[in-house]
Each structure stands twice: as structure tokens, then as C-alpha cells.
Image 1 (cartoon, rainbow, N blue to C red):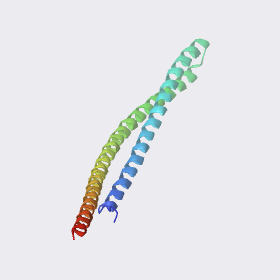
Image 2 (image 1 turned 120 degrees about the horizontal axis):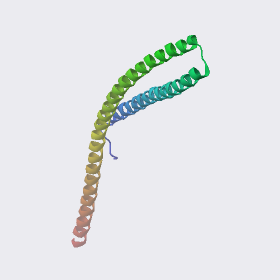
Image 3 (image 1 turned 45 degrees about the vertical axis):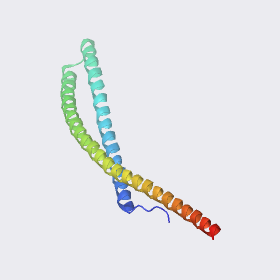
Length: 147
């Protein structure tokens, strides 16, 4: 008879939950990375835009063009604030995903530890039984030889 873990369905469930939480954590990491990259691109664009506006002013750009560039830059600054708020929200969601993953990991780990312990105990019991059978066989042979 081979070892059978009575809580195997629960262990499979915990493994499945852990996989789901891992995927959610990866998705949260990806979302944070995407928004941070967009924010970094916006920062680079704003920096480049300020430098080009300064050069354009000396080159004779019209007031209407400068005003349009100023309004556009204000919109971009507002967009940057929105992105920064998004990053903060996504960071919070990522922290929640990390916590959920760690919880799922611990719950699965407890069951796997229990399974390993029960398997080890089962194997030790099997070895004891085999030894008892060998001892009984030996004693039976000795008894037969005496008689």
C-alpha cells in the first residue's frame, strides 16, 4: 500500500490559489512598471520641451505659439500629477498583492510540510513493519530448526 495524503485536495487548492496570487502579483508589477515608464517618458518630454521652447524663443517664435506651448505644458504637468497618483494607487495594490501572495505561500507551505512529515512517518512505519516481518520470519525459522 502506498502513501496517501488525506489532505491532497486541499493541498492542490492551496497550490492553485498560490499560482493565482502569483499571477496577480505579476500583473500588479507590470502595471506599476508601465505607469512608471510612461511617467519617465513624460518627464523626459517635459525636460526636452522646456529646452526647445527656450531655443525657440531666441529664434523668434510668435507669442501665440509660445502661449500654445505653455498651455500644452500645463496640461502635461496635470497629466503627470495624474500619473503620479496612479503610481501611488498601483503601488498600494501591488503591496496588497504581495501580502496576499505571502499568505497563500504560507498556507501552501504548511500543508506541504504536513504532507512531508506524514510521508516520512509512513515510510518509517513501513520499515518497522518490514523489520517485524523479517524478525518473525527469522524466529519462525529458528523454531522450525529446533523442532
